[in-house]
Length: 311
Ligand code: RRO
Image (cartoon, rainbow, N blue to C red; front, side, top):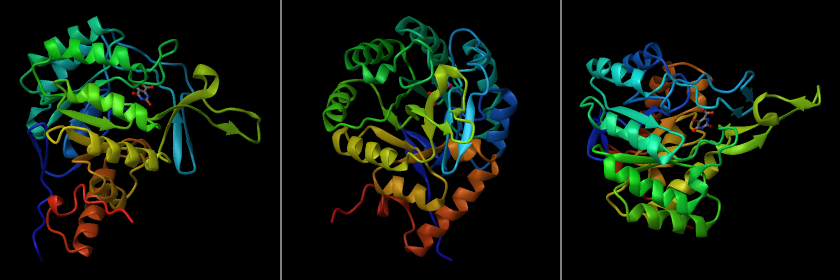
């Protein structure tokens, strides 16, 4: 059998293969992060953290439906100081460790990222500017002036490769504006896309909402793949070549992984599919992805990455 080389890298950090967990599902506690460590996930990505620990929004705050899910967790996490202790304990898994940061202001993000910059075991920092579920807070990534300021101020204190978790964009003018901001910054990777914010799912039988926070409005995952692919594709066209792209949104099979790479992603993250299963999902996706590559007679990612054909 021909040997496959699935290696990829994000901001100069090597990943054995391109599939790892998204920030969000099952990556809050040390135990959950250790489980990801022993799994076939190519990296260990943690839940976005804040200055203080948070319980998040009231339950029910997650609902699975056919093809996807709606959720409004409201950033439950242990607080950044706890992650300062946990990250060094994850080094034995010998895979990249990615911290995710979602402070409530520029100052809070600077505080957290300054401290994370001192932790040698952290490989990458993903700044989440796209959480749709904080009651009373708009999504930073939809406010371009504020995003520009946030990115510039964080760039001043971040001593690790900095990534941005972006919300989905739906208008080419918005892609252009955001790409320009990123191209003129120290950002070295982007992750597209966060959940599609403020969807509403209706329980037909009972004529009611399905989650409690925000009168039933929440971030939608799973069925969002066309938007995830579009954001990866458009940002690959617009961003500097040295800025890596991580795709996320509706990946349930090895074919989905392949499509994201074809559109220009360097790696992918798994959110809803992990939420709806367990860490076995990484092994499953990896096996399916290998099969896809073999069937198409490729042996390494560069043979098809960013090679989507237009008709
Ligand atoms: O915790 C959440 O409710 C949440 C976050 Br921080 C995010 O970035 N995206 C999302 O769908 N949910």
